[in-house]
Length: 308
Image 1 (tube, helix red, strand yellow):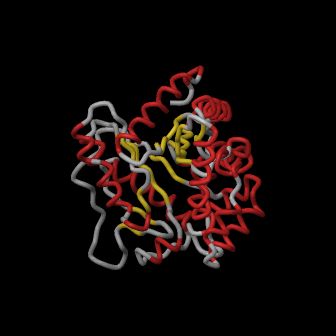
Image 2: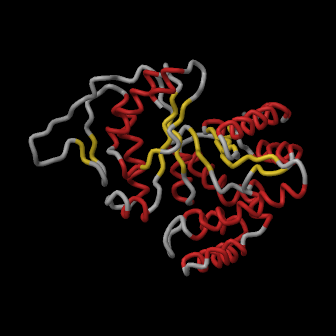
Image 3: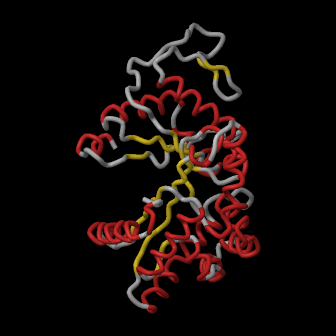
């Protein structure tokens, strides 16, 4: 990201996402300040929790009390960016650590630009927190038809709790984008994505903790999501993929003909999405760039310009 910041002039750069368990809050703040300086204010700080399998299994850091860890991390990052001495007493973090020789310190570099904080969250409590403290929400597993109850109600409650409105939060939604020129190509694309979605529902977590599975369940697929997880955890990957329906793939991606993608983006815009994150499909870098360019042109066609 530092390289891209130095080599570009207009491109917005976002860390989507830094997992909280991989760095201390002050280490996150130092990286964010540096990237904001290099890019002259074009940096967005994206933070996420990941899950217990990754944080505890890969990094050896406790996943317990993620809500408190997220809130305190954001507060410490903002305090560090202010240039003031960092003194913080929370449930998860004590700065400086009491009982030793340390005293409050400040970073040598003060942020010269605002550093917007975007949170990648899925669960109701984390969505509520996002509404309270974040500048933007990095959404995923998003079905616009079920987004009100699954996501927006919780975001809005968090916003209202601190006197904010939806206008104070950038709703940044991401999905894979791929264009099919005919029905046969579209069927093949959808079939190819079913195992990937089955992995999200069954493999992105444990038998008891899977935030993606929970998100799909809240949007109308609780029974299917539970069955997919059961089969995946039992080792039946093909059987799990076979349970994923065409509707599940199409509802949560931007896969289809150009007209289908354009209409889907209009639906996203109308339910409240402000910013689109594209994951362009393609076997090569050139193919992915071509898909991305085509998708950007489709966004420009969407009336009112509310999605970008």
